[in-house]
Image (cartoon, rainbow, N blue to C red):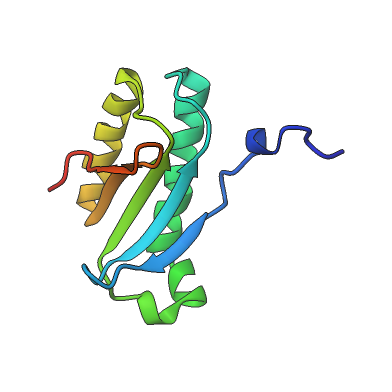
Length: 123
């Protein structure tokens, strides 16, 4: 049976976009978040699972299998959302940022609604 709300489907294993940033030389994985931020445990768990899938894609060899030309490039994950995450989600993203830094992966939060690019805890 098809889910009547396509945005509510499980997107845990989906990498929305894989690109190369010519300005920075980074491989960029884009994670789109079309839903409003509510800071719920359910939403934060889903976000964590998606980040885990993205990091696994980068570190466990899947990137090299599908895009060998991008293998030795520095990595960045862009979380694209329509509005600024609320306080609880921002705090959670800060924790994710810190964990990604150990793997030398950058995290950027990009607010698409206002076409304003916001960097979360840039190092």
